[in-house]
Image 1 (cartoon, rainbow, N blue to C red):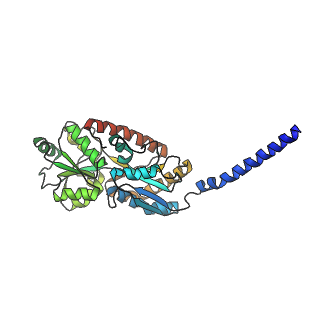
Image 2 (cartoon, rainbow, N blue to C red):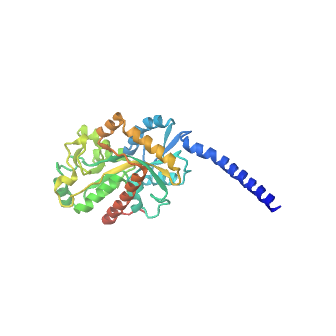
Image 3 (cartoon, rainbow, N blue to C red):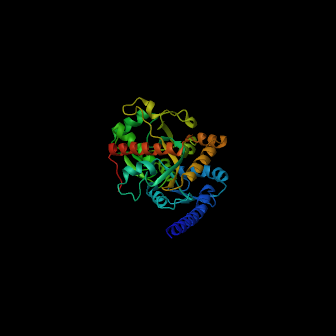
Length: 335
């Protein structure tokens, strides 16, 4: 009797196992066949901003590569935190992604003490897209200087007089200027705007004196002769504006090794299947390697950045550590 019971139990166990295996099949197939529906890319910055321009550039080639539409959904505000919170709590199925930056997944963690998510633990870094250089941009009618040295001398002679613009509290444009001012001992007034278009417009109109904004954002105004460029924030010169020196090469005390470039990249909610992450990473890599895409970005003053998910994870962590140090040195916090 006992043997008969055991055989029956084993048969029931086997049937249960088959049932579970069968139930798991659709999930496995769905993951391997991803994507099977449109993908939503959550954007934490306004339409027309530098971040948005980059996302729009890869949108079409990426959706062709994946065979599904990519919809950009704008949830701007709080330096990208609104969008980040939305994605952090989204279903980890690969259909809701964040277009993040060195600010949203780096400096914000140091500036905002009560974020409802963790910029590392609650996300899976999928793929970086670009390294983006900022450039110190001035209105020559507000500040009649031609070199970085003259700029520093003028600001030091009038502490607290000059207002600099940024694309928002905690944005890369804010942190780059904050690091610069901290290193050189400058006293300026920070005026945050809602995005790149509004910020650069404030400089052109003379409402603010200057900004460290993305090269691609200031290029039209620079070519039109409305602004002057004094120095790029990257360690190396930028091909699109080779005539503009790096801040690090100025020789001014505090500028040695200055490198305040930022990156843009794609993130998924924690728990997203690694196979989806790898497939999306490979698709982004393939798009960035397309000659026309690379040429377009480089003409705008950007540098392609290609990393595996594991490498990008290390980049995100190192970036978070760096900006925590900058925020502490500059005494910056936002609550």
